[in-house]
Every structure is written in C-alpha cells, then in structure tokens.
Image (cartoon, rainbow, N blue to C red):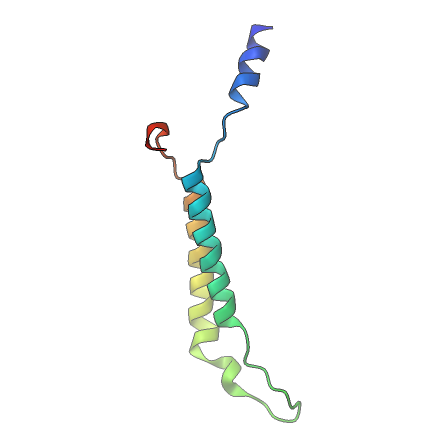
Length: 86
C-alpha cells in the first residue's frame, strides 16, 4: 500500500522542465527553417523545366539544417537541468 502512495506522488512532477520545452521550440524553428529553404523551385509552365530546383540550397543546405534541427531536438529532450536553477 505504501509503495503505491509513493508512486502516485512521484507521478505529479514533470520529467521535462520549462527550459527543455524552450529548447524544443528552438529545435522546431530550426526544422521549419530547413523546410522553408527546401521549398520552391517549381515552374508554373509544364513545358519549361526549371533547373532552380537543383540548387545547392535545396539539395545540400536544407537537409543539413533539418538534420541539425532533429539532433537539437534530441539534445533538448535529453538535457537535464538542476531543480534549483528553475
């Protein structure tokens, strides 16, 4: 009986702090930035091929930024902050 009471009191505290959520929001912003950099490059006229979709920004830079955003998200979830610093 005592063990179940201890578990219920431990369930009330949050595993992630406010700083973790702020870091996760920054990571989401980095991912969105990568998606915006990857967007576009199409052509309105189907008869005209636009080579702009093979630019360095869309092929190389944007995926690197997206992967960095996901890595930052993992860091934001795994980072532990001291309880007294909040």
